[in-house]
Length: 199
Ligand code: FE
Image (cartoon, rainbow, N blue to C red; front, side, top):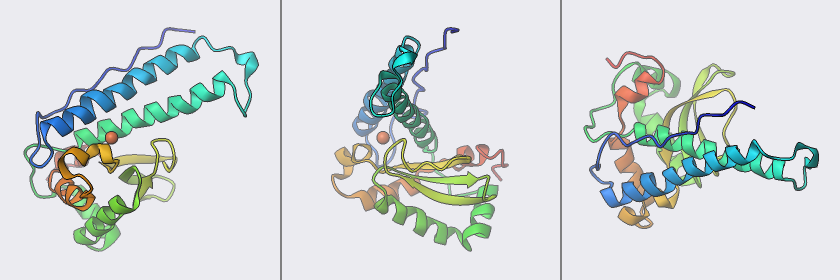
């Protein structure tokens, strides 16, 4: 097998955010997210050595490594999308994504209401995605990194609602954290994920 390039930790675009302290962000980014990157690399290296002849669906090294590889890799992808779709220089929602949201949900506010409510309903993640099979935008929840994701969708906007994302700053005040998140969205980044112009 050819040598696979290990994943690298993607740095934050900002030092701190209004409403998310540098302590909260560094625990989340430098400890938790960086830990998923490290574990993904460790699991992937172990898979290169696994004994394929012991494959078994109740328990086998191959099975456990593949399950945890999907857990670690989805954690990496979701965290990178989350950190990148926040900004320390927030501007009002703009660009073609806003028009797309309005045509799908009736109004921008109707989408905000649904997205924020899903932040209270999910145990892990909320994502605005483009579902290619349905050919439309949808809000989906993931209770665990690798459970709840829907195949053939593109992540557009990602909200982390695990307690580790906000507990230091908001304790159990998840609603206030979600309101702050909605105010910190980097709409240029969100538009760029669809190759939409930002204006
Ligand atoms: Fe997280």
